[in-house]
Amino acid sequence: MNFFVISFKKYFFTFIFILFTLSLLMFSNNNLLAAQNGLILWATKVLPSLFPFFIATELLCQTNFTYILGKFLNKFMKPFFNVPGESAIAIILGTISGYPVGAKVVCNLKKQKIISKIEAERLIAYTNNSGPLFILGTIGISLFGNKKIGIILLISHILASLLVGYFFKFWKKDKFDINYRETKFNSMSSPIKISELGEIIGNSIKKSIGTILTIGGFIVLFSVIISILQTSGILEIITSFLNSITNIPKEVLLSFITGFIELTNGVNLVASLGTSTLTILLTSFLLGFGGISVLLQVYSIIAKENISIKPYFYGKILQGIFSSIFTFFIISFI
Image (tube, rainbow, N blue to C red; front, side, top):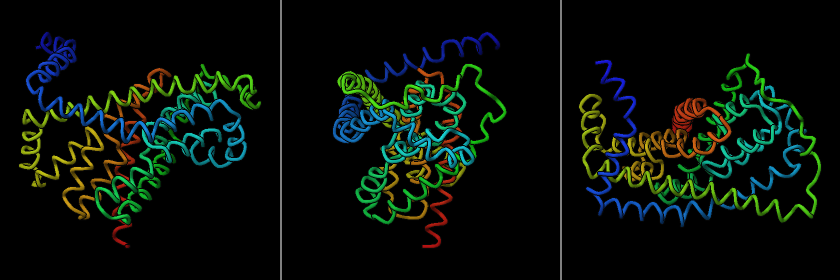
């Protein structure tokens, strides 16, 4: 038994990847269509909206804007979130830009030694959020056909994010990163020279291209994975089993599981069920969590800076729960 357990752990991912490759061949027609749809989604929605923000964040992190922002907000950020004032840029850009800009900004801050590894782990838990344009436009207006629902979801999303940030002020509070040297931005407090402008813009574009291509790859990959799960009947089996023990309607379970894997497809399915309180609460949770696809996108970004994915996972689960609670109370009062 021990032998089989050790072998299973050792070859688990090998087995999964072989199974995935075989599934690509077995369900090639549906997978091709899913990959095309994922690529269209990336090219028409994600690329135009996120790529300029990636360049902007790279440029801002090369200026003294972070240093100036820190001087004004340090008295607020330290007691409420237990991070330096300069970290506010991650909260601001992570909230207005959408996934996974917040993670990118946190990595830039750590790379420049503006924050320590522990502070980066605190920030990563709540600064990577869904953007207002996506919540108000795509979900509120396009999917639910109701702007008020989009506003409720956005308010809940932001409040939940800030509440998670407050709780994560206690993350490894008694520990100190011995590899972190507090340099306090001697290099970042001076303005950019004109002679450096071309190089800075060029490097920002190169880094942004790499990030946006990675995101595109994840979108296409998870579009295909969801297609395989649907075509093979695996999703149907899972939803039938959960339905038998919870009595929750199959279509609700299917929407939730799909959204837990990949946010956009899942929210689309949830919204197709109507504008009941349950569907709005499910959407609120999925927006807070972000989905496994976004989680892996974030992991691909933060792994280079040796930042743990655990606080991000815990934080997003909490944000999904808090967001649903806020949404419930807002709906109840309104």
